[in-house]
Length: 560
Ligand code: C2E
Ligand code: CA
Ligand code: CA
Image (cartoon, rainbow, N blue to C red; front, top):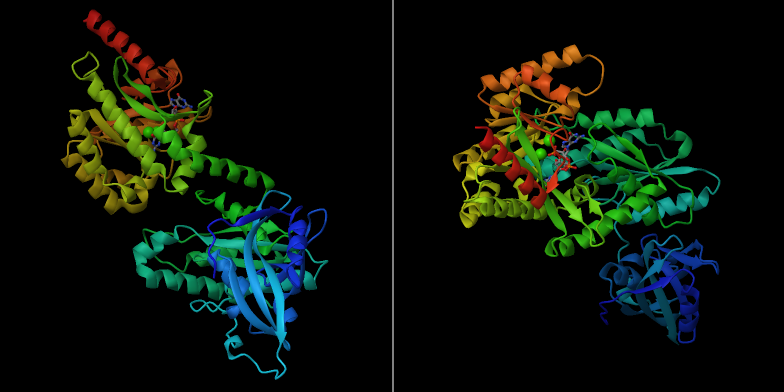
């Protein structure tokens, strides 16, 4: 078998020319979609059509496991084989290719080139031909395997050309965490439980199967796809795990099939895109595919490909937003990252943090920002800026990839700074998920001299027990949770109580997001003495912050 690193890519408009060239050399040349086990025809205007099933052409129901093209597609390498077709022997050469469809998407398929060699007068069967068909059922869940699902789906679409269908993917949120918390067996029980629910709710008209590790796929008639019913089924799934610390959630992405000649793999990737779009949402359970999601995916893809280059070429810059005492004195700053593109456009964290988080790259960026913050602090040593601290953001996922206390201590040693000057902000919402682990991490940070701030307090589902269990030093109240015109009196009662509580717990309090003098006055009267927000300053590039802070410090020195 020859090996080729590069897989050829042909557009739907040029592929027929390629096939015609090959036909000069071979007796039969055709494109095969191996996942669906069907001949693929491409019309002159570039549209795809799914033709006959391959094995019917070969007249061998058991060909799949021995299929040269299946092997070529799975290994991404060209493959050769000799087979028998009726009385003839033939040699088959299978070339895996990417077919670029009119919308720009790539579909992996195989060009099968067949040459008849000689006839076999005795008509003997070749024992090497006797292979098993590919597995049709998943061993664990007894649902259709991915391959079987693809083929059954195609058959259904061909058999019912006038029926509208929805292709849906159910995705278990945080499946990795289930395996971590309850072991592989616990994870398996969840998968089997979901399969049982699917079996009991689906009839013979639906096609369903397991699609990759923690995903399930379902083809259902459009007029039977009622969101309310599905929401109820998804609620039922929750009951499969009884745990005070973990809520099982399955989310659904739906693609209403418009073009039945799309490869099933593409339809599934549309449903996948839809489900991914709500993957981090707490409430949304069902999402529909929209073409805009594809654009977003391409943009996200750019972010992922450009990230490492941008990191090593200093495109990420650390901005500083002052944290200010009620009398106006700057005590420190929060480090907030910006991506400054080569042509000058500045991307804000909301435009790239999510995708970096999903692709497990965020910890690289965070480690970079922390180092930059430590460098700044060390530059301020022996200058008037020496008393200032910098708060860095630590994403909870960082703790999975980095030994955060060790790395931060290392930075303090490397740059000769006291740990108290590098504060650590951790978001309240995620702290909530795994309190025991987080509280021991906070303890570890404390023991090494760092101050820990609970970020965004009030933005998510705040928990008072969190304050009991996590001994943080500072509570950062998010202004957003009390914004709006109505009910200022009630808001004030809540704000005042939170501030009192923090004071009684010997925690500092910062309110962030303050935009005007009234808010500051009000918060001062409620007992808050430290602020961060546009009222004082936007986040600033390092040089601008240094100028502002120097001015501020000399002004306070002069006033004394
Ligand atoms: P955050 O930690 O809550 O940071 C405060 C955000 O509020 C900043 O947005 C800041 O510009 C904005 N802000 C400050 N004052 C005001 C105000 O008066 N009004 C309003 N409406 N907004 C204000 P930014 O810089 O876009 O950052 C957004 C979030 O991205 C941050 O929220 C933080 O969670 C995250 N982030 C930023 N930099 C980093 C980083 O280096 N690492 C990690 N893991 N997350 C970061
Ligand atoms: Ca923060
Ligand atoms: Ca915050």
